[in-house]
Length: 313
Length: 290
Image (cartoon, rainbow over all chains, first blue to last red; front, side, top):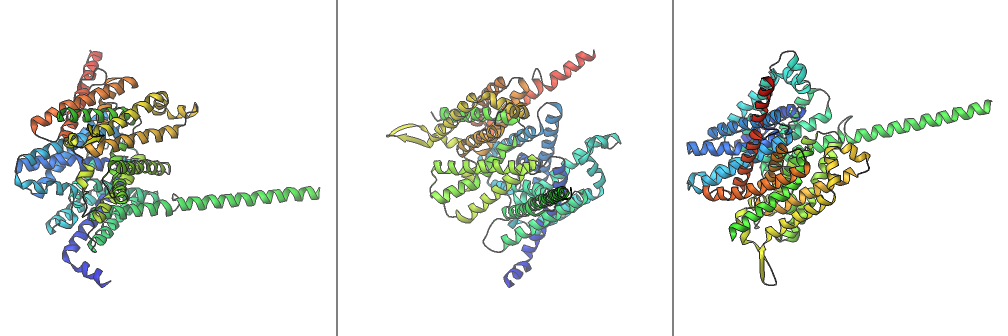
């Protein structure tokens, strides 16, 4: 126990814990809206699509500055959301195919650029893939500061525009009818997802960032029918996964933080599937058993009554 | 000679994925390929830990088993009320995380790193050959993917009608007595076999791309399923040939260039397709207005 406390007192671990918690919190909040709008896999597509942006940022600047990478990744992410939106709106191709097309083509382009950079003999390139596959343990105080500011920004926007996002998630037609700028808000939500993904990539990596957007939101959906509560729960689940994942990872055994965080989130999901009230597996079984018993009792009663009638007659 | 083998491998992957991918695009399950190609990682690692060798057969088996488990879990969560895209996301990311943790726990000192498992390199295909009775019969990858292609062709031609009805109208398929669930799992099995057979040698990204991009391009060009399959095979092969030479020219990743060419062809179809292209539709609208 004292070992754990010692680890917690290490300022470096504290930063990482704080950073991962914030990351889980903000991606849980954004993820809830993405889930309700049936765009869960958007996070996956966007985090892959960031690769060419990062490569181009590196090629243009020649330096490995995190801020430039973030700008490049965000630009590529926005281009990807625009591409996905354009394909789904203007052709008969459905959203899932559009996502997959944009994901693979952007990632393929990114790989081409990456190999170009590697073959061009620039000795400075070696950290590029690390950026994409994520290393929470290498986060610095400055990174955590950036993450904190951006997470607060994300959560702030979601709180301020909660009513609008709610309407947009459940009934976009009505939202358009009462004069909301639906297309703009669509793009705004996409932009928020892009920001969350871009910030998260360097901490947990491409694939696992997608999990942080999806899994807490799906778990939260099991516990409640109210959007406000769901968003809060998803944020809490995300933060808890970040916290516990980082904690286990910091506790020796040298396991990577990102996958552990995702596994904690997945265990929360499994708990939700089993134990959630009303929608969970257990409560459904209990309800079924209760109804069956009740029905059986009523049947027995009616049989008894029928017999009693016969005897009186 | 190595050029020939690389292009042949690319074309075989493109054909296998093109056939299966058409059904995925039609059934709105395009992201399944991406999910399977990530989630097979724990299967590969476990197979490696049990067998102790990097023998492809064991790894294929492990990967195929996990691929089917992935599909089963996705279906399970979907039926219990989770949206299908979210259940895909939850399942594959969780399995991938398990895989990464297994890799970092057990195989740190062994010759199995993430890059070589996940991002096989098509450029090395010609050097990994099989010998039977002392005679070199060509690269292992060509045989593996060739077998997968053969399996796909046989099953799809044998049950073409059933697959077609299941893709377009599952309710009607159930009504006329076709075992819809069986064909769903058969298709998913084919997807996992072709994904797994291809990605070890050519890399996950090429497989996922070939599963979706050429079929979606073909979807913009025709209204018939049989033609759509043919077009997507042709487009896939064309992108692997052009992509190879593009990669030679640019000195870049071969798989990446193949995907870029496929993406370029998609863009062309998106703009200039005679029936569904953006530009031709605009012209048509103008003509109607005038």
